[in-house]
Length: 95
Image (cartoon, rainbow, N blue to C red; front, side, top):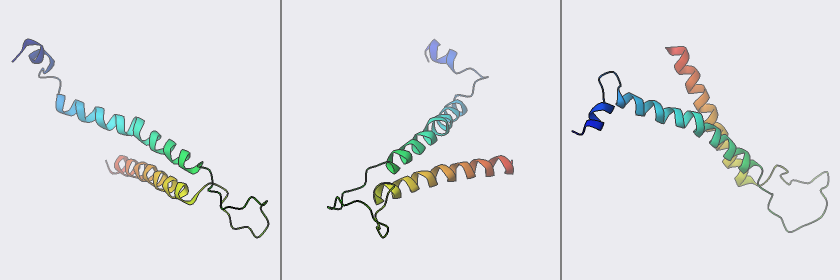
């Protein structure tokens, strides 16, 4: 074993726990905000043109927040973030 490797794995540093903490920190610290940002971006996708450029009327059934696929993708992203928040609260309360 090299001296550098022997010095980095001392008895008071648990490297197995350290990498797990770093991975969870990256997922929760950067991953969830990134998923939320992707959801916002999907929600702001432009609506597909239906072939008509007439002004909207009272009986118009067009979707004004963007296209349907963007709204579904945004809903999935927001559901993932809400599920992670719920699981985090459940884990904190149960311990």
